[in-house]
Length: 232
Image (cartoon, rainbow, N blue to C red):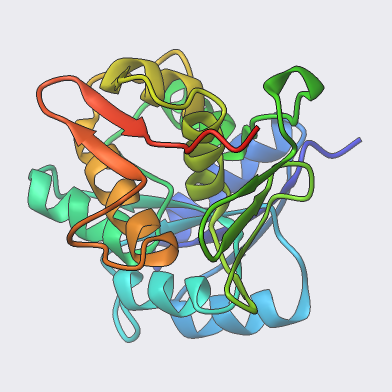
């Protein structure tokens, strides 16, 4: 049984061949394409679980390809980049990537990052209320849907998992490390920039005034806290 469908997008044919061989050996179903334009076309015709997307490509670059994918899909996106500066990594996350890997990378690191991007927090009956009601926002933990007003809001899988963890551990400060390891996995803990980007994205989607949030609050030098009114 396939462990998932992966689309590899890279203009280097040797990298595509190596990735295809490696991922197929791990049980993934793999397609590949050489540029962003072809990737968007493939995604329109077939459902994938994850896109491995090179940041630096001729034509439609990796960042713009990522933005266009995110406009219509919640597929997991893992960005591959030779840039290691924090601003470049934040730019990839801002574009909609769930994670990034800096080239050159080892096969075990790549496989670990793929597993992290594909992991999902399961719904647990012990987590409490399956539906969280805020002022004009409804968070359904069982169906993984968020509605603001009359409109359903699109969240990426990682955005929802982060929101899920926060709302099921309400009214207490949760450290950065705990959030990173809960949502991305045990190999994470230092990537605080992930949280800054994803929290900002969530605020834009669920808060009436993202610059002055009411629910998703920053706990300075610690982490974040979800302020959930007691409606029992």
